[in-house]
Image (cartoon, rainbow, N blue to C red; front, side):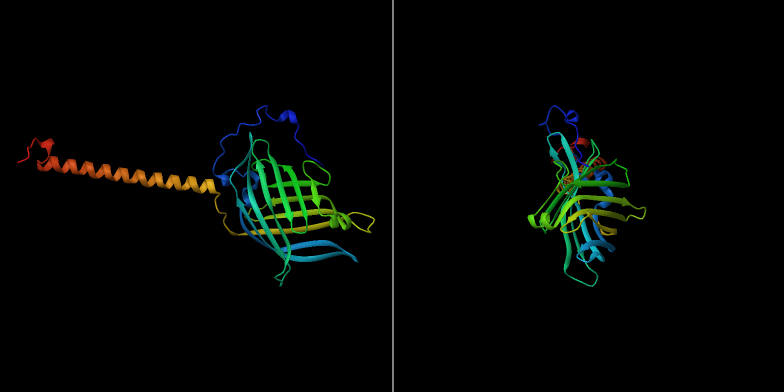
Length: 258
């Protein structure tokens, strides 16, 4: 289903940009649990073959790293840049490679996943979620101007993607899983084919803070060090004055230089 926000919901001022929070990790809402480095060893794929559906296992490695906040005039997105690589068990050759962004707009709850795979296919899936949602779904549809799908001429001819949907669920143990369906129009087949993938991802590394967050952290650290140094200098100066007064030296004791 095509998703479009009514134009009446947009502000009249389309140019003024607000000042976003530099810390993306604190503003990802439902995407917070996806940030980091992940592995999934229980992948299950069902794809179309000439003789019928074929089920295969796969292993997945994925990175979801925070990016600086992105603005379109008054609109603010906080998001993650991701790269995933999939191989078959006991194989080094890349079975599937994918890059893109996951984005969340706090003001509206809008979710976006952009995806590009190096077989000549790009899509933008959309959905909605609240900040504390633990499950959410996004969808892309061929022909949509808002959440559409484009692919190269051969794929359009032989394996045309009609619809893409992904549902993500975050678990209490910190892992998360996805169930994905890609509906294909396969050349020579009378009915669309449901190509499915699912996996559970477990964290093996923490995310790296985005550049503006790192800069803010550095500035805060430098300010803290400067504050400590200033306090130490003032303490030394105060101690010196007290010592002079106690020993009867210095101008405060009324002495005159010889």
